[in-house]
Length: 40
Image (cartoon, rainbow, N blue to C red):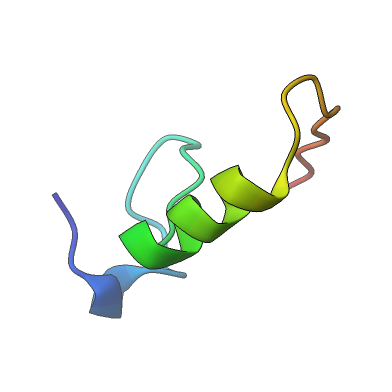
């Protein structure tokens, strides 16, 4: 598991990593069924 200081650095094989607080806010803000586009 990485620390928050390591967010924004290459640490995984493609996972979208963010702080728990930001992930919770994104979850609350985004309706189920929203299309997600991930770009390198």
